[in-house]
Image (tube, rainbow, N blue to C red):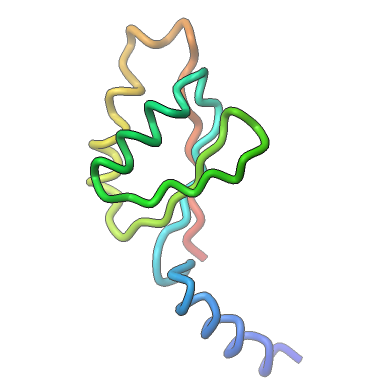
Length: 93
């Protein structure tokens, strides 16, 4: 039952640095900026997890959202609006 599932599940998540110990961030709708975004993330020390597949998706794990916001801010400038903006989904459970 749940009493056995959750303790083991949380132990695995802790070993893998997954929520609730770190944020898991999905960035989609990259509008052809996938490599630029991955490069920006790597320069700041983030591990960009590229699942392959769709050209417009990157995952990463992070501790601090303010620093991530600063890293991604250039991709949300008004001058980029014709291409669209990245979409960010945050997993913290």
